[in-house]
Image (cartoon, rainbow, N blue to C red; front, side, top):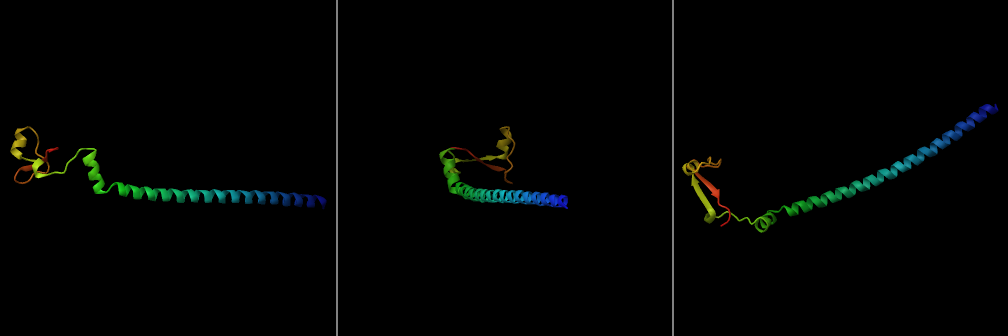
Length: 113
């Protein structure tokens, strides 16, 4: 009978140790999960902030301002527009543009005024 009691005692001690280990592992994983969730929320907030900043940077007014300042680009006006007929384009050796009209006139931007 003492052998049986000894086996039961070892089984209870082993079960208790396994229970403690399982609870410890469970708590460790829960803390890790909460840490990952907090990091995910932080990354989502950062992503949202960057999306708002991206939309603010891509406004048409800002793009136009940068094009004028950094690239020295100008808006198209009739004063700097050259009209080339299809015959002149063929005579000069270049192929007609895709945007040619039925009358054969092609609008070409000349660059700086």
